Image (cartoon, rainbow, N blue to C red; front, side):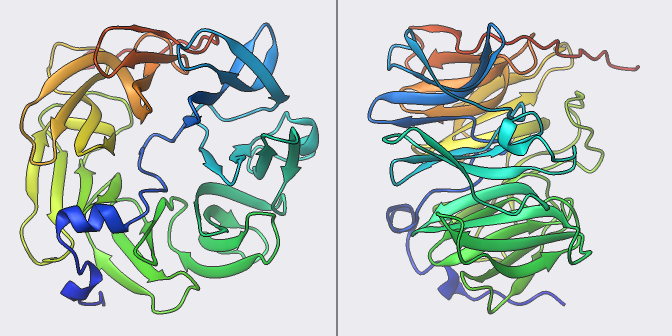
Length: 347
C-alpha cells in the first residue's frame, strides 16, 4: 500500500523550494552528457580513434584530450569537488575484464589528472547523484544479492559502500531533494522516497515514464504505448503535479510523445514528436506552466549547460550538437558518427 504524503514534504513556496534544494541528479532524462566548470566544458568524444574524456573552451572551439575512456553513448557525467564522475563501460583498460552487463563508476581529478575506479565491478550501475560528499546510485541488478535492482551510497572516494534499498525493475533514476532521496522504481509505476541513510521508505503510485522534481512539482511524461524513439503524437504527454498537494490533479503541459526533457532556469526543454509529418525528434521549450511553446532545433536529449543547449543530432545518433540559448550560434560538439533510424507512420 502506498504511503500518504503530507504537505510537510515540501514546506516551501515554489521559489523557496528552488532556492533550498540542490538541483542535482537525473534532471536530464536522457543523461547528463556535458558538464561545465569555470567556463570550460567536459564531455566524451572519439577523435581519430582517441576515445575518451575531453575539455573544450567556452567558445566551443579548442578541444583538449584528458584521458582514455570507453563510455556509453549517453554517459552520466557530473562535477563535484574539482573532480568529474562518470560511468565507464567495457573497453577501458581499467575495465577490460567486465562483461557487457557491467559498468564501473570512476572519478577524474582535474588537478592531478588521475582516473580512479570507485565501485566493485560486479555492480551494474545505472544512475547516480552526488550530494554532500556521498554518491547515491542505482543498479540494474545486483548479482551478489540476486535482486532486480538496488540503491546504494558511498563516499566520493569509493569508501563506505552501503546498500540502501531494492526495487522491482532494472530502471532507477534518482534525485536528492531537501535531505530526501527520490527514486523511480519500475516502468511508469512507483516513486520511492527515503531518508539519505535508507530509512523511512515510502512509496507513491504514479503512471509515468521519465520523471524529475523541480521546485514544488513533479514533472513527468506518460505514454502507455511508449516505444523509445518512435513517433506517436496522439498518445502521452508532459505533465506537472504538485508535491505539496499530492492529491491534486496533474496538469497536462504538452500533448504528444515527449521522449526526454530537462529543466533549467524555470524553462522546460524537451524532445518530442508533436507533428505527424516529422521523422526525427524536435526540441522545444516552454515555461513551467506549459505556455510560450517555441521550437528550437531538430534533435534528441536536450542538455542545458552554461550558455548552451546541447543535444544529440537529429540525423546522427550519438553526435552531440550545440546551440547558444540566444540562438546566435550552433554547430556540432563531437566528431563521432552514428546513424539515427527514421520512422514512418503506419509502418
